[in-house]
Length: 205
Length: 108
Image (cartoon, rainbow over all chains, first blue to last red; front, side, top):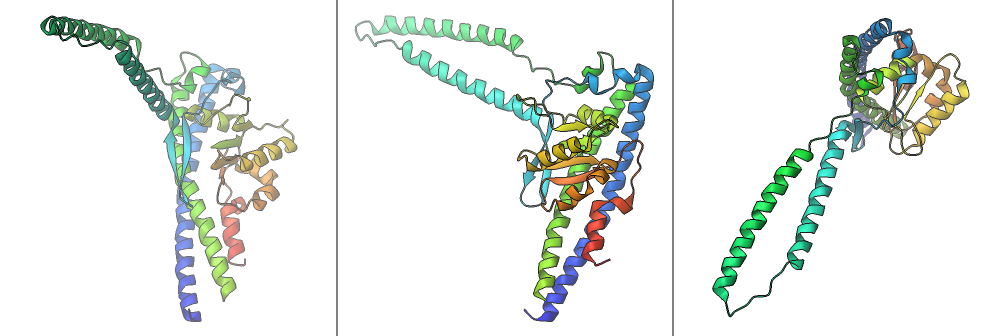
């Protein structure tokens, strides 16, 4: 690679870097305005409910994260809904257990074929099948009512059963800011990667 | 995700659903007030940077300013450190670590 190639590549990287810096500043503006909204709404909630009722003393110490981050490759990150993932995992596990149980039941209840009175057994098995299917239907209907989707944990309830509108709005603002945070983290990781490449190209020159 | 910030910022982020306390009572957030010693903030920051389950650390810019040497030492893409505004301290671009790195890169 000639020195002009080096310089051209460096120019491209620097331009890309500056574009990302610009994106970083724009993303920062968006985050700052969402945080500002959130802070104002929390202040309003504190005014309405009293400062002690919207404080760290109210946090539920059994909390589990609803949102998390997933890393994709060297520079990409995305937002994960950990609550939905946990629900799906639980469903899969329950389905696997059900499948195992039904398999075990099938082997245990296996009947020996009796060739002497084939017709009778056919009738008996048909009737027992219909009984089984009825049982299955009834058990499905009974479990259907009991296996309701568990309520999504909402940190809003840490601050009382009837949280004011301002606190609800603060929650929305901070929830919106999470996607911006993820975007900004991706931009910063890309900036970091470009910095390393620019530095190494400079050293080669 | 982890967060170090004042009470309002942490309350907002926990309302959004990022708060987590594991079975060993390890939190992924730290509420910093006037009484919090600097060593506690430093320890929390160092712990979060070492944890494998954390990809982003959110920290209020005015708190980041207090542990600036530690933040400048951090030379990995992940966990990414994002400086966020707080209620009482508006964003100051002069203190932004990304813009500082840009200036350093271009020799200013």
